[in-house]
Amino acid sequence: MLKLFNPPVPALTGGLGRLAVLLLAGLLAACDAAVPEPDLGVARAKADQCVEPTGDMRRNHMNYLLTHRDETVIEGIRTTQYSLVECVNCHVAPTRADGSAVHYPDRDHFCASCHTYAGVKIDCFQCHADRPQVLDNPDYPHKLSANRYHQLAREAGGKGVNVSDMLAVTGAGIGAATVSGEGQP
Image 1 (tube, helix red, strand yellow):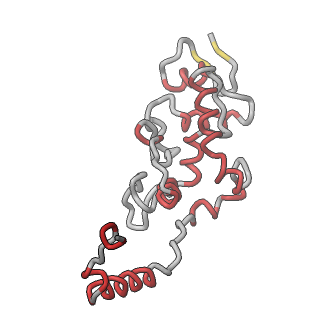
Image 2 (cartoon, one colour):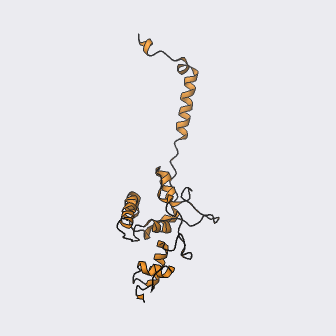
Image 3 (cartoon, rainbow, N blue to C red):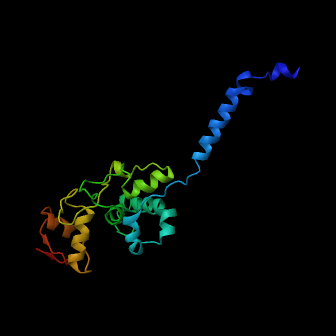
């Protein structure tokens, strides 16, 4: 009666079945190698300058970025502590050794190296720049970029920079404001 429900399969009980078991064992033995960890050379070199400890950033960076996004877009609060622009400027190498640009789909891109390793999709760079902004190109990606803000903030020597300062420098402002934050009529 048992043979009606579980008939023997000659291919699996004969030589072909043994061959399949041997091939499977060979494949499993070849899979013994450890998964290669991502190369984070650029990030490790600057890890002591990060806004949070490394372990915390590995676990919570997405929460920081989403909170920063909501504060910026919804509430109009612009800070640099958890800015995606700042992360990219610090952690992503501007070019490869051969001088070509590094983009987020590339294995060499800092974000892609970890996200590929973890199997997590990156969608930040569908809108945001995936390469560091260069200070000597203040028009990248547009005149009121965060890059320009940080350059102005350094020039202000800690006195603060507001939107009218940025508009004045780009030529879009009404009146003339100075980098120190004091407006001129």
